Image (cartoon, rainbow, N blue to C red; front, side, top):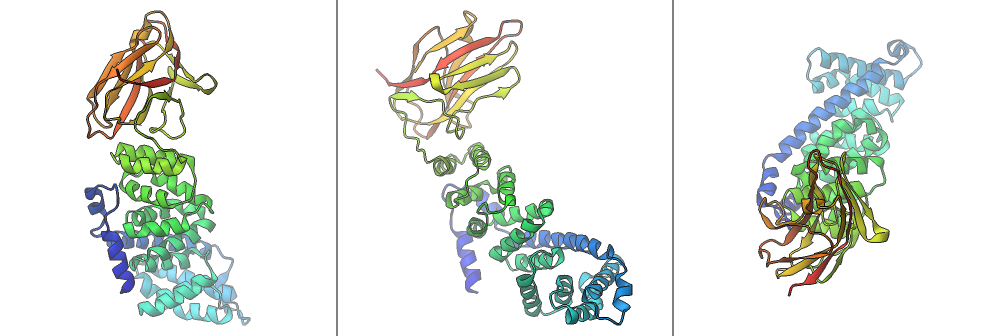
Length: 413
């Protein structure tokens, strides 16, 4: 009861930076969904475990020999259980029919994992079944059937720690099962109370940890909890951080995205103040994001504090973008460029807007040489500004190419 109370308390606690509708979306009925997926997963694992049993060499003959053979008895128990299930019998009733053989196998080989699994599945009392599964898991964390039944039991009890621990054990030795198991992990990650357990187990010590996190960063419904995970985790993975920050920004979770950026890079972004803006691309969009598409590319030149650009005729769009803090005051941006062909510089524009808004707060074409763009007071309710440089090379015209020096913030006159 204490655990249930604690879980309810953690699930009900509001999460900083999370949208109320996102939190509400996952609380009702989630336990049923998790259990449902666990049942499907357990069934799939059972089918795969049975494949090995059916492939054994003459287990029926070996089981009939006068010499005790626990492995053969275990194989036959699995074959009989599978045949009963395939004929339409309930898996638990099929396990009861195979139980005598499973018990005989355990008498000769107390560590036989599938015999333990069948004995557990045949047991009606949930506490007794749990005791058998716990004992079996303590001695074998590799068998798919045994771990699948353990997973089903723990998911049914909303035991997030046990569920993730079981999945971790399975994926360490059976990484090929990730397509079956990642959906269950995503459902668990959608629960606020499960986040600390993800922090506990996903520490980068297994290859599947990073694979799952990169996959999860592409699932919009778990991004707020994934952000909370990243703030508490020491796991360092640049592709995961990049996808997570970009995803959170796309959802409008700018404050949480910035906290993840700060956690990942150790850098803080203060309000715009006089001084240069370097061309760092470490973690967009709080650092610069450049295109890498055919016909339009930008290459940073850190040694010269500039970027080199190329836009082919008929191409155009954003060639540089980053988020900056709103200074909540008038300011100016100084730009110095070296663009060819002559006159093409007017096809470059400096633009500012609130993230997610299609309304430009500032939109002005470049002019030859050094120039200063004076920008009036941005809206106070816009905490960050999207600073963008756009370019357009017209069809039939030579490509736009050249360099742009670092932008520089200067005090407004």
